[in-house]
Image (tube, rainbow, N blue to C red):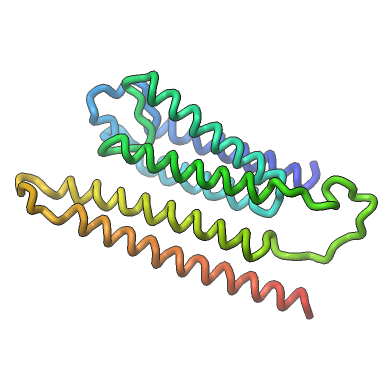
Length: 219
C-alpha cells in the first residue's frame, strides 16, 4: 500500500474507531427520554475519541485524496446526525445541557468537512499524470492560504465549543440564585478566551515549525 492510500485508509479507520469509542462511552444514545443521559458518560473514553478524531485529521492533512475522503465522511456524518435528531425522540449525541450543543457540534463538523473537501478538491498534476511531470522538490503540506483557512475554521470551532461548555458549566453553578447569576457568561468568556489563547499558541508553533523546515530544505 502506497503512502497516499495508507493515509486515506488510516484516517477513515481512525474516524470509525472514534465513533465506536463514543458508542462504548455512552455518548451515543437512542433512548434517552429522561434528559439525564450525560450521567452515563465515560469521560476517559470521550477524551480518547477526541484524540482519535484529531489523529485522523492529522493523518489526512498531507494528502489531498485523504482530505477529500475525510471531508465527505464528516459532512455525511452530520447528515446522519440531523436525520436521527429529527426522527428519534431519545437520540442523544455528545451534548449535556440542551440540543444547542449538538447543533454547535454539527456546525463545527460541517465547516471542517467542507474545508477538507475544498482543500483536497484540486488534484496536483502529478496525481493524474505522474509520468509526464518531473519530481517536485519537497514542500510543506499546504500553501499559506489553505493553512489560514484551516486555522480560522479550527479557531472558530474551538472558541465556539469552549464558550458553550463554559456556559453549560456556569448554568450548573447557578442554583437558586435567580436571574442575577453571572456564572454562565463568566465561564463562557473564560473558556472561550482560553481556547483563543491556545489556538494562538498552536498556530504560532505550527508556523515556526514550518518556517524552520523550509529553511532546512532551502539549505
